[in-house]
Amino acid sequence: MAHTHSHNGHSHSHDHGHIHGPITNINTAFVVGIVLNLAFVVIEAGVGLYSKSLALLTDAGHNLSDVASLALALLAFRLAKVKPTHTFTYGYRKTTILVALLNAVILLIAIGGIGYEAAMRLNHPQPIEGREVAIVAGVGILINSLTAFLFFRSQHTDLNIKGAYLHMAADALVSLGVVFAGLLISATGWYWVDSITSFIVIVVILIGTWGLLRDSIILSLDGVPKDINLDEVESKALQIKGIHKIHHIHIWAISTTENALTAHLVLDSNTDFEAADQIKKQLRHELEHMNIQHATFETELVTQECTSRQC
Image 1 (cartoon, helix red, strand yellow):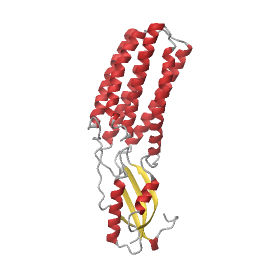
Image 2 (cartoon, rainbow, N blue to C red):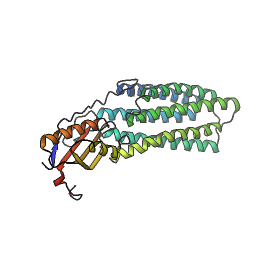
Image 3 (tube, rainbow, N blue to C red):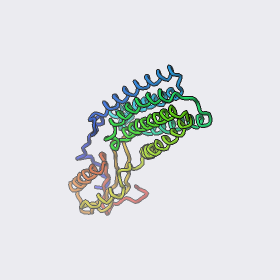
Image 4 (cartoon, rainbow, N blue to C red):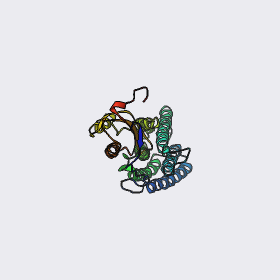
C-alpha cells in the first residue's frame, strides 16, 4: 500500500467573482472604482491645465496610475477563471499574486514620486492657488473614499482587494492632506505646508504598503500564506486516528484565495486501503477549515516509512 495517491472526496469551490462584502460581486466593485477614478482624473487634469496648477496635474498622474492598478487587479480576477491547459495546469490563478506584488511596487513608486516632489518644493516653494486646489482635492476625498469603501469589508479576503483598498485609502489621505494644505496656504501664504503635509501622508501610506509587499513576495516565492500555521497543520493531522506521523509537508498559494498542500502520511502498520482512504478524507475536511482547499497525500506504513533522502 506504500505510495498511494488519491483525490477521493476532494471538493473545491472556485468562485473568484463573488466575495463576501458590501458588494457581493467584486468585479462590479472594480468596474465602479475604475469608472469613478477615471472620471476624476479627467476633471482634475482639466482643472490643472486651466489653472496651470502643477500640483493638480501631478496628482492627476498619480490617480491615473491607481486606475491602471485597479484595471490590473480586475484583469487578474478574470484570468483566474481561465481553465487549466496542458502548459498552465493551474490555469492563470497565480496572476492574482503577481498583480498584488505589482500593485505594492506601484504604491512604492508613487510614494517615491510624491517624496521627490515634496522635497523639491520644500527647497523651492512655488505659489499655489490654495482655495482652488482644496476644492478639487475635496472632490477627490469623496471619490477615493467611496471607492475604498467598496473594498473595505473584503480587504482581508484577498491581497488584490487589499491592494485596491490601500490605493484608494492612500489617495483619500493624499486628498485630505491637499485640502488641509490648500486652505492653510490660502489663509497664510505658507507654501512650505504643502511639502510637510506630503511627507506625513507618505509615512501613513508606507505603513500600509509594507504589509502588502511582504505578503505578496512570500506568496510569489511559494511561501506558507500568513493565515496558515505549519505546526497547527501537523498537530491537526496527528489528532486523526491512524496517522502515526506526517512529514515532507509543502504548503503554498495557488492564488490569493486558494491554497494547496502536499504531504507524506505515515499510517499505522495495520491500515488497509479503505481505512487509508477514510483517513485522507477526514484530514482533507479538517484542512478545508484551515483555508487549504487542495490537498494531496502520499501514504506509507510505519514499516515502509521513506527516508529523508527518498522524500
